[in-house]
Length: 124
Length: 130
Image 1 (tube, rainbow over the protein chains, first blue to last red):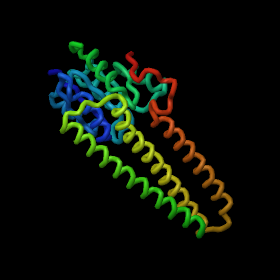
Image 2: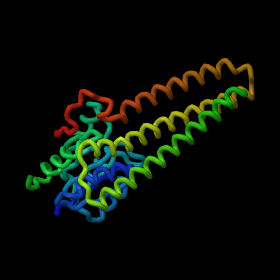
Image 3: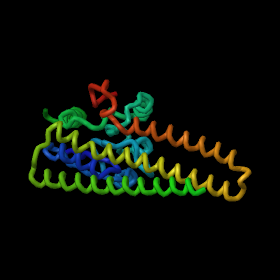
């Protein structure tokens, strides 16, 4: 099964995404700190999709994305930003860093499932 | 200044109430989500959105706690300056006013940034692919 990792400093936000994805044919790993996810990726974990929050303490979503792009195995891994931010400048910044897409919270569960299905090319 | 001490105490109280609200609402949501997951209940859009409001509430309250901390710091610095030299009071008061204006501006900006789709009725789509 494809591995999808979620990174969000809010445990409740992670619970919300877990409730939506638990019926999908994917393996999910969740992290409350981006630096922990990045460390596991550097140690050999190879996710098929990364979904991350933007505003997080210590390492924010953009810093995390930059870190991911420096690791050969995740240089091109699809990455979605899941955030309350809606500013066009931030979306542009994400796009320039190689972000695949932008999801605004609160997300629609059906749309989140569709987005994961589309990026991972799962059977609809 | 006695009045500023009272304001400081009031801010501290508001901050503590907000921290309690964050803790209780987080605990409440985690219990609900645990129940939903344990019973394999499929959530619909309305329930999912309602559950996600908790995260937005937490972000909003954390941002206002940051503003309160900043205000308390400014009040503290003013109190120290005033205590050491009352002649500097006018200048210190002006600095305090400027700091509080900046704090208010930052807090309002965060209120808008952390509201997500709840504050932006024009956002018909929550997902955008690049």
